[in-house]
Length: 171
Image (tube, rainbow, N blue to C red):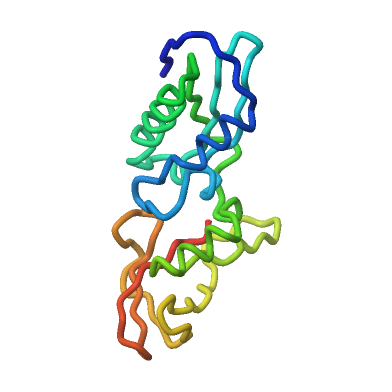
């Protein structure tokens, strides 16, 4: 998607700061940068801006909203033209979520993902880690459904405080 604006050449850091304000439509407590969805920003000498994004899932239903929100935020700040390039390689990983964002997920009531365990081998089946309740910090929890409100979250239940909560899956 490309939108033409008058030529003003911003710095890369200026564009990154703008993107800090673009919230994920499914988890509005986090920005697209917090999630690691923004992979790169390039600003040409003419002021053309290219933002490279990687969706959390290849079939993520929010990616078009994210692309539009990124373009709208940059254009609203007076910069452009803007091109948002979506790439699927390398595949997005929850390891790209910042530590601060993990703390905000927990405060929001979503159990943050653990770090992805990489053994160098593709694992078809792996033991699931115990999920810590974001409300009472108990590990006495259970997964009720592998899919919560979005494909990237699981629906869980805490046996200690009896609260339902979602877990952001580690991928």
